[in-house]
Image (cartoon, rainbow, N blue to C red; front, side):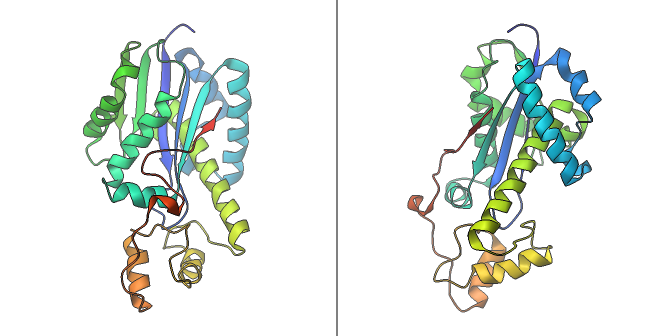
Length: 248
């Protein structure tokens, strides 16, 4: 493995009240970036669901053919809740970004790690991710470029955004099959999600696919006369540390 590499890292599902937060790290040689551009890879938010699926399949196939790599981590609602009892959501994302990058096998090549920063201070976000990757980064000559809107600026980050978004969309579809009714996008501005939220709060505890620490869940639970939302434990389906991964 020779030449400079680029690693793009992005997430999908940071804000929704239900479903996983998905982080993806995508890596390829710098010389191959033009292939992403020619294929139409861009920020997932600028693409239709059909186009995202098409590009996801193209990325997966081409990754095998050309030796590209990607890693995906799905942080479940339980994992998010437990992590946020110990740290902030931004800190949880820092851990997830680093978690995905560490599993890539291109550290000795060197290059640029391009991050779509979730912190209001993009530089600070990059520094924190770098601190968790100190030994990994020391294996090669790496720079960190952490910016807001990196998925628009950098094709490698755009590819990561497509992977993360498609993986989250598929996870939402699986949840709908599991519970037997539509849940929408997961954002409370979505009427379908609002209707689903009411059903998911009918039990003696909020449904496992809800993020219990979200104010929307806390308020709705209280309005139902059920008091405070229970505290989530590690046995509720998640762990404080990242545990799930999808290999390329």
